[in-house]
Image (cartoon, rainbow, N blue to C red; front, side, top):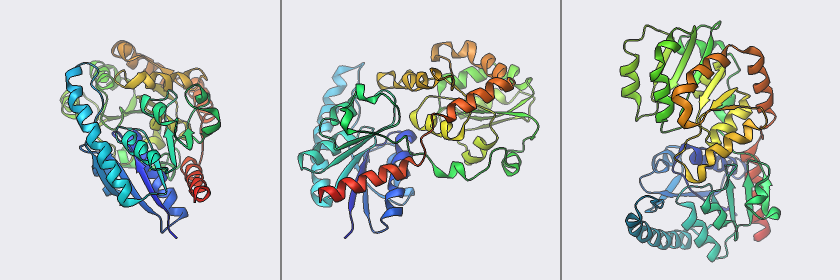
Length: 368
């Protein structure tokens, strides 16, 4: 008898990668399992999930607009439509459990599942729980978390510390792999900086690099700079006049496994998935938390590392002034890099997707 699983959520790579990792782990353990994703129409998951080989249904759901309250009339109307559509999806598919990974679609899907008496599991990626997950926690069977101390948001007896599932392909390449240097055309003897701003890019990080390009070009380091699709033209224009073969500018790094392999230091936003990857790969990092996220959760994520001397943090408002100088000072400080690498590895949670999948299967078999 095959089990049926609904996995709901998305919006960014930070939600989609863990969701796909959980789906893959379930398929590994139960090859005949039926898995249906439920996402938000117009968001990244509607493309990424089918590309990974899974079916997806879309809900017309979106987030509340905190600046323009009038726009929320449409948001509320779409929420009602989403609840009705989620009801239809669950009635038709009849899942054994609904799994929420965060993002707009998870709220109506898990709410309807609970109303039908279907067990639900929440995967909370951040160190500061979002409003949606806090509301869903009341009826959740289990809450899988990535950080200690989450009982300040959720009932203690429902919490399971699993870490965040990450992209497994990142671990297939050895650190400092020769083929990784060759892929980028880089020198094995030089320090390598990796700059990433999340799946959509980060304006502040990109602006900080652009403002100090000459300083970076003269620093005897090599740089892989992922701008995100919205900022690539501006970045290419800025590097046009810079005399350097050691700066690669791209909107998307196709071989992130190679980029991580050779990176001596990473500059990154503080999204939960990125942090989980950096912990498992033991990468020294300077985090620039995005201020444009709910409950400022990226700052909380970053502080969880900073408080363990496992990362440096530079606030978004200070980045243009301080980021490049801090980066160039740290990348040549061998002692500090080694200390940060050792400390961040201490925070890594391994086999997260497998552990979450095991818990999902346990809940379903118990419920049946």
